[in-house]
Structure formats: structure tokens, C-alpha cells
Image 1 (cartoon, helix red, strand yellow):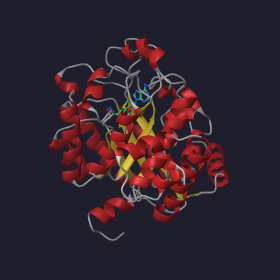
Image 2 (cartoon, rainbow, N blue to C red; image 1 turned 180 degrees about the horizontal axis):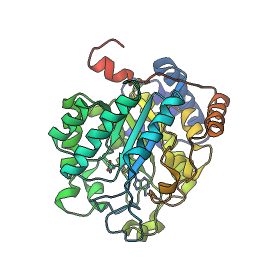
Image 3 (cartoon, rainbow, N blue to C red; image 1 turned 135 degrees about the vertical axis):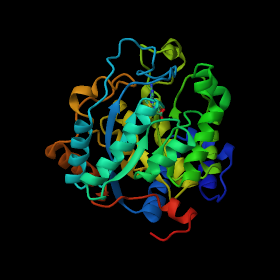
Image 4 (tube, protein in one colour; image 1 turned 60 degrees about the vertical axis):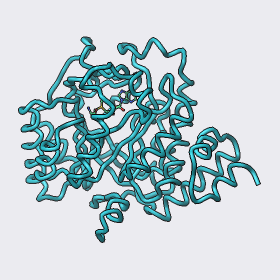
Length: 363
Ligand code: SAM
């Protein structure tokens, strides 16, 4: 029996097993990915859930060394979509039976920002007769802010740890109080205590990152018992400090394949969580998200950001700019999902089964 086959028969995957899975190639990799696909269907079904993504502002107080919208990038035209624009995007999601939206922005914590998100949540609930589910992805906030937003209707939150190895985290962030790994981890704890379905994730293929780091990321997700994950390839951006290390990077195709292996390995490790097919996969391969569905992902976030702002939410090079909100584009996406062997879970939140199991609620 090959090494990978032996690992696939184990019930308790160790770091060294995960490293081998992540490095697998050829037939072994196919076998490993096929097992992840089967487990996904068994555990979370064959439906893909859409979350309409609204990147409502690129104004950010942080200076993450990899991110195109970091505070110090003066080439970025900063925007703040109006409430009406945001609500129109949410209405589009609702009318197309997406059932959920994700509100994402740069990271701010001013009282005005907190209040604004709070008001938006209430308006989104109102416009959809309480039907639209809302995921927030607005960075680190205080416990009180997370509670306030939860009470106003957000029920899922995405906050990537970015790198679970603190040493690596410190290499890709400035060393200041607002870029603290401990604070980010603590924020994940606050979210969980508040009652959110909690999602986190990492970038894959960062300079200085090892296979052991990535296997450690997967074990970190398991140790904090996440409900959802959104992880994708790191893609360089020329106006960021990390760009100087691009010679250390794997090719984009290698990062893409590694990201697919991360998704497949996570599906084996945490069979009943929701895993998103990240947009960064699509930046490398137009069929990237569908390929992720085939190895374990079950959520797609079609981008509904108003088109005039799209190119200013440029986190990395080649980020797709086209809007995905037209009837024709939705049908195309639906068709390509169908061709991958899956269906779309319309008009249903598609919440994390893991969340209900860990909180012992029945769905
Ligand atoms: N401010 C929020 C936060 O920090 O969670 C959300 C917005 S942030 C721009 C969203 C995600 O973009 C980050 O968590 C990060 O992983 C990802 N990102 C930023 N720069 C990237 C890059 N160069 N390549 C791939 N992903 C990137």
C-alpha cells in the first residue's frame, strides 16, 4: 500500500501525515482528492451555497505587508459605498435566491464605522423580511462590537488568522500593536463566545512558509474547532512590501495546486464544516472555484460589489474585476457548477453543520 493510501485509512491525522498529503502528486494526489470529494458529499451534501460578496469599503487602518489595500498604499483610490449601493447589491442577492451575503471591508474600528455596519445589518434584515443571512468580514473588533453586530442580525463571521505560526505571521505584518497575532486569535475567541458561526483561514504559498506551517494551519483550525474556512493562494501585489520576496515564491500554478490540497486535507480533517472556494483561486485559473468544489469546498461567494468600486478592492494582481450579478452570469456559474457534478442550494442559508453539532442544536 502506498504511503498516501495508508494515511487515508488513518482516523487521526498527524502533522507529518498532512505534510505528505499536501506534497502528494500524480495518482496518489488523485486518490486523496477523490476521498475528500466523497467525504464532502457524505457529510455536507452535493449542494453549493452562494454568498453574495459585497466589498463595501477599502478604507483600512492596517498595513499588512501582503495586501494591496494596505493603509500605506497611496495608489489606491479609497471608497466607501453608500448604504443604497450596498442595499441594492443585497437585494440583488435576495432576488436571485442567494439566501446570504458577505459584507467585507478594510479594517476600521471607529464608533462611526461600528454604527454604520450596525445600521446596515438592520436595513438588510428589513429589506429581506429577515430572510437574508449575513456574514461579516470586517476584521478585529472589540467583544462589545461583535455582540452588537450579532444582535443586529449577523450570524457568521470570517476572520482569517492569515498564518497560524506566529513567527510567520510576524514576517508578513508590521510589528505594531494593531497587527498582533495574539489579538487576532483572541478576536476569534470573542466571536465564538458571542455565538457566531466562526470562519478563519490562511494564505497559501506565502514567502517563508513551509509545508509544516501549512499542516500546522490545518491542525490549528481543528484545535480551535472552526465552523467555516476560507483559504486561498497568496498572490503577490507589486505595491506591497512583500513583493520584494517574490523570487522565493512557488509558481502560481504550484500555489494553486497546493491550495486545492489544503482544501482536500481540511475536508478529511473536519468533514462537516463549510469550506469556501476562494476568489484568489479564480485569479489563477478561471475554473479555480469549480476545481475547489471537486476536492471538498461547498461555498462560493459571487462578487456583487458595485462595478465602479471593483478595481479599487485590488488585494492582489489579476483579481477578477467582472461583476457576477447579472442573470446571465448567475446562470453561467450555475451551469459550470452543474457540470462539476453539483447543484446550487438556493433559498437556504446552508449553515455550517459543524456549528449545529458543536452547539448541539438540531437544524
Ligand atoms: N479587513 C478584514 C480582515 O482583515 O479580516 C477583511 C478584508 S481583508 C482584505 C480579506 C482577506 O484578503 C485577508 O484576510 C487576506 O487573507 C486576503 N488577502 C489580502 N492580500 C492578499 C494577497 N496578496 N493574496 C491573497 N489574499 C490576500
